[in-house]
Image (cartoon, rainbow, N blue to C red; front, top):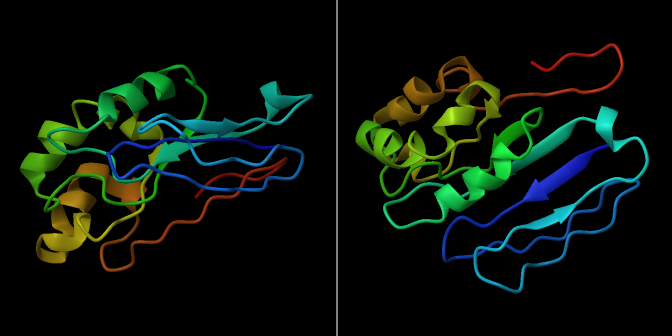
Length: 153
């Protein structure tokens, strides 16, 4: 069983329909920057929990509001779907916007690189900020596996 939460962090909004076995479908949010969620029923306490978003941190974003939601799930693995720091993915933007909100979850965050993160030379600030959780520079993919007898990598 798996629990998912997706949230919008920018005025662009996020609407998604995601099907997870044993869970209801996610539907687009009707209010700007309001998170949408789906949870499994039954033994959800023992299930892995993923929580995340994309288009996360900018000067005027809802990153603080989504960070407050993540705070409610201390055992969750946090993921990003790219564009972690606007607008150019600079070290300064990661520190000013991302670190001040989602930074407290960095040790349990599995990031994905976005085009804004990659605007700086070789996406260096992205890899510097997230460290080994970002994967290998030049090969920005990661793989995670959950279940009995497995580990994330």
